[in-house]
Length: 180
Image (cartoon, rainbow, N blue to C red):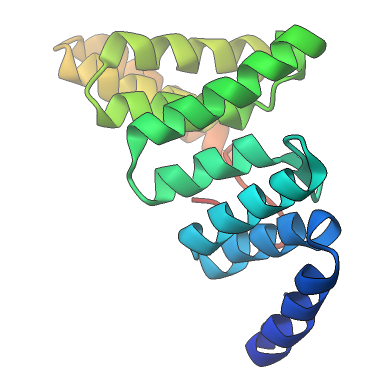
């Protein structure tokens, strides 16, 4: 976790071998956010979920959500959308849409955008702005959609808003790790 790779493998491998239900998801989190080893991260989330008999959480993040980020990193956009939908639908059913991590909508929207499903992507970006009205990423990606549609005045306005919100610090970021 702190960049001591040989020790990470030794200690976390031992922990996962002894208690996969407790440690596999956490090791998957490390593979995802620190090493960008998406295949190993997915395998660990699957192992942890299988050991616990449910979709679990590690570091406060749902494994379906993190699997979706992994699939996005692997450019498997259908799998990204499916994983994010599992996460989103579960949270909506249990707690309501306002409890969904807005970045699940962002990754789903980006996956749709990469598939050139502009209308569907716009729906996801609008969902984000309902709960996080200052997120510069949304305005930037909406500007891309407007430009692709030839709506250049709307694209310019969205791009200007994106730049303003970015300068204010409203962009997808996490302390301690770099986001995709």
